[in-house]
Amino acid sequence: MNNITTLVAFSDRDKRVILILFLLIIVTIAFIAVLGAIITRVMQWQGKKMDELTHDVVITGVIENRKQFIRYARIKNWRLFFLQVWIPLLIIFVGVMTLIIRNAVTNDWGYNIYDYKDTGFNTLFFVWDFSDPNIYHRFFGITMICDWPPIINYPHFSINAWASYIFFLGTTVGGTWYFIRLQCLISRTIKMYKLSYTIYKKSLEDFNKYDGLKESINPNQNSSGQTTTIDNSNNVIDNNDKRF
Image (cartoon, rainbow, N blue to C red; front, side, top):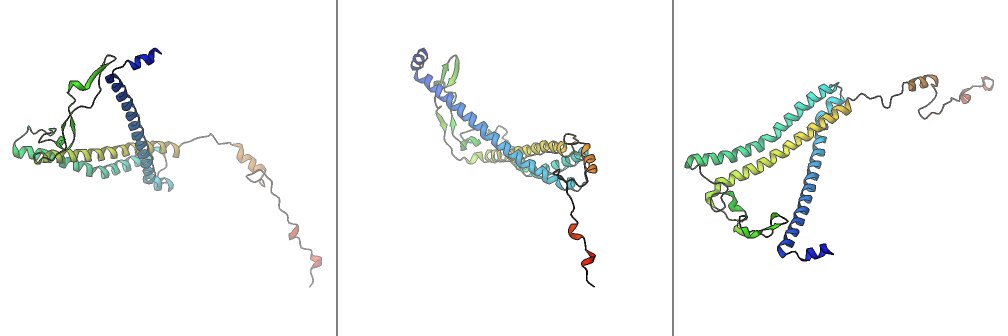
């Protein structure tokens, strides 16, 4: 009863803080779940890629032990990684060099790429003023945000921010692409070590040295344990019935 009375006694700001905390927890859990599912799918997909890279040499017996397998798989893995990341690295390079060349030509090294008014890529996004003290409230001794901050910028295009746009696009697209390929590299590496243990593992768990002895004693015994007999009665020829 006291808890209910306390909750009712909360101010509107307190209730708003509780609601925001609840929403943040839900959004965080959902984000982690989605991200984990994506990472799992990528790891499974790239694990199959490692199977493709090493299948032929294992089946044909070219590689005979775990050490050779790891050496071969590592070379194939890194070679594939370098073939896949040169494009995102080139995109990042173009974005960075565009900004450097622009600053060198204009001799304007104070160019602010984060500006939201004229020269930065933030001109393309909504910008909120989180410095407004009216949006914060102390809740159980902790200062927390309890209201939407005021919007201080609406998305708009600025010709003076063209270099910032290219820089932001290049580093964002190229960087995301690069880290995806990096995750693929890690996933294939994990699968490589798993395969090295399962393919070349020496185990006596299902071995029984008396199995061969049993087969030598009962040569007419099949795999199901039943003894087979040969009926030659139909092959006997009664010479007395032959007519010449």
